[in-house]
Amino acid sequence: MSKLNILIAGGGLGGLCLAQGLKKAGIDCEVYEKDPAVLQAGYRLHMNGDGGNALQACLPDHLYELYRQTSRTNPRRELAVMIDSQGVEKAVRPHIGPPNDEVLPHTAVNRRTLRQILLSGIEDRVHFGVEALRFEQDRQGVRLYLSDGSLAEGDLLVGADGINSAVRRGLMPEVEPADTGMRMVYAKSPLTPEIAASLPQVLFDGFIGATDATGTFAGIGAFVPRRPIREAAAELAPGSVIDPVEPYMMIALSRGFGPLPLSDSELRGASGERLHEMMLSLTEGWAPALRGLFERIEVPSIFPQSVRVLKPLGPWKASRVTLLGDAIHAMPPTFGAGANLALKDGAELAARLVRVEAGELPLLEAAAGYEEAMRRYAYPILEMSVNPSFKTDFSQGPGGRAV
Ligand SMILES: Cc1cc2nc3c(=O)[nH]c(=O)nc-3n(C[C@H](O)[C@H](O)[C@H](O)COP(=O)(O)OP(=O)(O)OC[C@H]3O[C@@H](n4cnc5c(N)ncnc54)[C@H](O)[C@@H]3O)c2cc1C
Image (tube, rainbow, N blue to C red; front, side, top):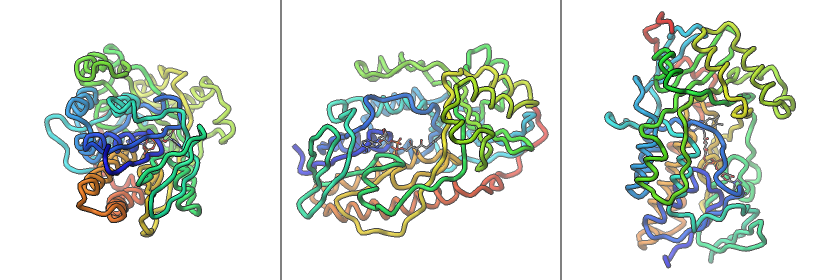
């Protein structure tokens, strides 16, 4: 048994990364996740050095290697590329984040696969189907009330419970996420070898943003793992539950920070077929190669998403309760940074808790140090990601090359 006992509300990317980092250092922790299992929530996640370095710090070597082998193959160019609806390249910009490895860069992952990797080896510490309800804290410790009627006691509670965080509600009741106005429809389109061979190379760059004159915007990202996921998992993490994934193109359609043609209640109530129709009507007249991606969309994969954001907060007094990831810096997916930052938070906090366990740092100083660092690296990205003029950050690309 370690000296410290850490309670983590939320078994998403950030919470599981922290739990892995603690396990690696021999520190006790328990994770409470309200969902009954690792559900299918989203598809492809762009990865950068922030997230990748955090995984390297927190995961045991074999799981970090599994993350690298199940990541997307190296793209032709690890850049975000803007094209118009006819596929003409308009501009490019590098991804944000620390310098990336040149040989095996952090590229992109299938979200569910990464969560399954993060769960490997800590299954006994993750309590699925248990919701964190509220907490109490005093000088001795923190108590977390759970939906199964039980009470967990620990030294520190970490709210890693996403944008609607119950822990944040208890800690900062005045803080509420704000609506950005952005509505997205998220889907997958198949990517068999035949389809891949028929597509223009630009669609295999790091990430593609296609826009037309009406303001429709499609984020497009290929996911083809470096190695078949089943094969890599069988070799590197035998016994872990890691599902196979076929290659796909992820599509996220929006009208920037403006509304879609369907109202919120229509979006919520719409069938997959109706959402597909809307996607097709918004991209009518787009180049055949792009249009084909939309026509082949797997209808059951379509789901709508409204994008909310938290405002950066001034410094607060550190306590036995802290927050990480979307619970404290939820942001629009403008730079594909939210998950990377949630992983970085997990690693930053774990590194400080290791020093607490070793008797080198008092617990409250560790929480304060983590929170200060997090505000410094996450808030500037949050602020940039809600700026609708971010597209002006794209440098002028070669231009004039049609798909
Ligand atoms: C369309 C879209 C595309 C995106 N693409 C990217 C990308 O390419 N790259 C990137 O870096 N980021 C991306 N993001 C952002 C990224 O998804 C989030 O920033 C990231 O998931 C945050 O991780 P988290 O662990 O903080 O929270 P979550 O992933 O939201 O995990 C929180 C967990 O807590 C659980 N939970 C909630 N309440 C409770 C409770 N009371 N008790 C117990 N458990 C609870 C939830 O079930 C969930 O499992 C994207 C977001 C969207 C919407």
